[in-house]
Image (cartoon, rainbow over all chains, first blue to last red; front, side):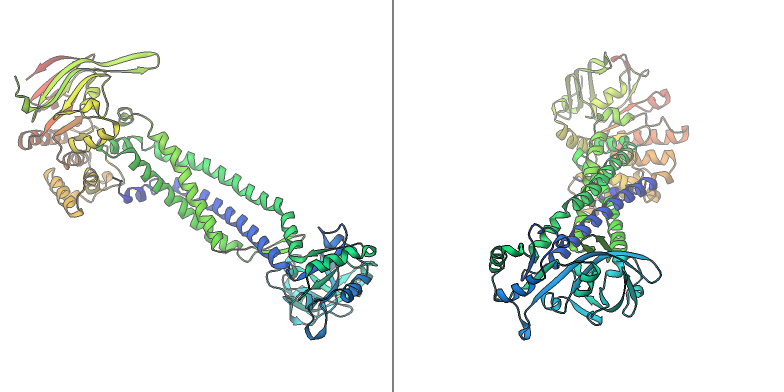
Length: 382
Length: 231
């Protein structure tokens, strides 16, 4: 037979300092676990959404891991467009987009420096990336650039600094922001898009970075065959989805580091919890012995301890979860691949609550066993 | 000679030993004891004479190293820890010197604890708790927490808790040791009434000769041996 639940509840208030310590420890761990989960989830979702399975990236041989390092002859776009069949072609316009991807140093008119990814494109980029929608202003022409709607966060400036009509300096050129675009859930949203020819000149390149081909009825294997046949162009073809999946794998150490940090702090919290709960239970050795003398079995006492510990840790978990949602939801994290909005979802909350429950359970059992160890006569005299 | 049907506790050759560092301590040695039902027995003796050890053995809190203890026909010395817990719940009520009430529970809830081990409705439990708190004169304090009660009142709550499951045996370890004379007299009067009117068998350890006077029989222990039995 179990002890009354009210016993476990009222024990929580015996020592408010201990209660606050345990609540704080649990809240911190749950906050970190949810943060790590949300970062990983956000990164996964963004990188998953960033590549389309219909798009093939034609890039320089040996640069399959990074479009930024890739060099492709300008002729490749025209040759690919002419050679490949089954290309997506709305209103007869074939979706083949030559692009330059360049990490650039820019400056605001007041001198503040910005470093970020600039993509040189022509209007065909909108055919290969139908998820991109110009939400303010227009597509950039010569002397202009268009900003992703998260770019201002990426650069740590005010949205007004990158609003249409403002200017940015790239080397010797002054570029006017022509518009803002959205590409929901993708890394493109933190990029700056500008005219392909302008970027080629400013970046002093004679090549482009990649040709993006959007297939309709075409077979990706045909694109790969094309790149293998045109040995003169030294090309390679990668499905855009696979490219971003590889990018996600590249960030595995970052993800592992966030989990490791959370796990280390959780381990510290568990040991802190052991101490706190051991002190809490140890101060009740005689009372516990009295309950056993009355006839309550040890298991009933352990269950009561676990109830008490679980209530504290789950309450802490709730506080941690609320804080995580208030502080971290909608946060954008920046890595070189782009901006990731932290991915909060039911599974993040679940991860937090499971962590809280595990802390409560793991934290209670060793101190409970230790406090039940003294034999009954000795404990009654304690 | 006592009628065997009237015997509640029968101990034969009870020895208790335990290790303390390198030494083997023998607080009780080859002790024989018979306690009839309804007896109010006081055990006296100097510190370390084995009084509390014997009390713990009689009440199933501890087990002997050798010998047998039979209470109401049950061989207590042979019970497993689990069976012993169940046996204690039904057969023994404890009264401690420092009351040992659970501080986060009210007087009512403290007294209710032993009843939670029985399959009993909430209403039945309430009736029993109210009745026993009325018996110890604390009807008006049942929703008070231990910290809101005097020492004498706390001990009366502890007696109510010991009584509520209606066990045949009450064991009391220095029940008046922490009380003033007036409160101690009230507690001893209550124990006498329980033995006399409810037929409870009471085994009480005390240092206080005046407390022992309340008992119907006094045992003296010294160095683990029963030296004297006084009427």
